[in-house]
Image (cartoon, one colour):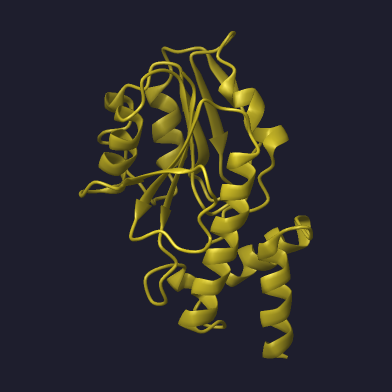
Length: 204
């Protein structure tokens, strides 16, 4: 049974995408986060998998598509929360975050095929990673990995060194206003790009 996991925070002002403020207000940053999450979940639901699971810190909202399984995030650091998400799976799993609204089913679908690989790894431009797939979702592969630092991706990739790893394209996470501008320009078809365009116009 294959599982596609999306780990996310409820888009509440002041709790998400705080590095977008300024130039955006906390409410605008939360609206951008909501658009990014909605894009990500729509793509997840359009990608074939046996289970589609949102691992959520907070409560679901109108951005939650029907047919999506929702699990609460556990406590602890990000490594513990990611490990717990994988521990909820019986069989191969691919995990992504809510920070790459430019993702497409075409990018995700290959990483749910573990015929030739034990793992899939998608590096992020900031030194982290945007996707991690495991044929055997062993939480120990994540526990203790330092998160949210420039070395996160390298440290996580090193945990996979004894596995056959398929490499996914690098993507840019949306963390800063510059990131948001670049991602919106690369993915103009997204809700995120539409929201960013409207808010950027208001700033001028």
